[in-house]
Length: 249
Image (cartoon, rainbow, N blue to C red; front, top):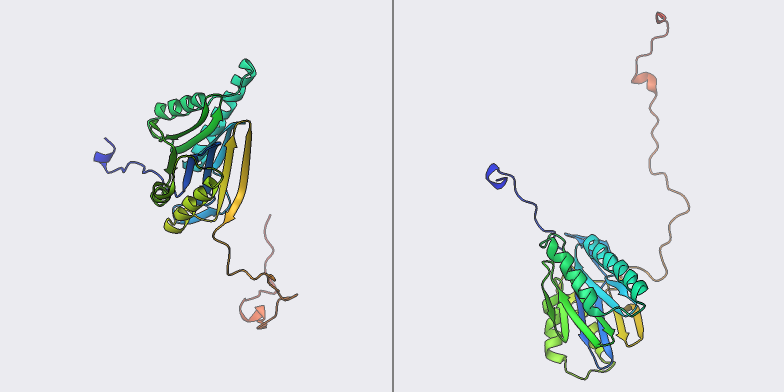
C-alpha cells in the first residue's frame, strides 16, 4: 500500500564481516575479523565479534551489531538461569534452539547471522544460524560478506582429524576475507573451545597495521605561529552616535 503511494520500504543495512568456525580433533575453533562498518565508514577497528554464550559455548555474529549483541546476551542470560536451575553444563543444542526460535519469530527483521560452536557432554558441535531462523550443521562454516573467500580456503585445505594447526587454517580463512572484502579488516580474533576449557585469543593476528604512522610519533610546535596580523578600527566600520536620546521606560 505504501509503495503504491510512492513511499519506499526500508532496506536492509549492508554490513561487512568475516566469521568462521571448524571442528578439529579436540573441539571447536571460532574466528572473526574485528572491523565494524556502517556502509562506507569504518566505525570501529577493533570490535569483538565472538560473543559469550556459556562457559563452553561461544558464538560469532555477523550482520547488525546491535542485533547480534542483543540476541547473544539474551540467550546467554537464559542459559545462566537454566544452569542455576539444573546444576548442569549447558548444551549446544539448547543454545541453538533458543537462537533460531527467536530469529524465526521476527522473520529476518533481526539481522543476526551466527556461527555457534561449543563442546558439551555429547562432543563438539558447530552450527550456522541464518537471520530467518534456518540452520545448518557442518564440520566447517563461514558467514558474512567475506564468507566466499573464507569458504574457498576451507574447501581446499580442511580435512578430518585436524589438530592445533586448525588455528592457522582459521586465521588463513579470516585473512582471505580481510583481503578480498572491503567490509572486513583489521585483526583476527580466535576462540578455541575444548572439553572443560576455552582460550580466547584476542588480536591473535594483526593483518592491517597502520603503515603511515611513524614509530617515533609526531612532534608538534609548542605554540601556534602567527602568520598575519591586521588591526581594523571599529570607528571606520560602525557609525557611533555620541549624544543620543535616553530610552523611555
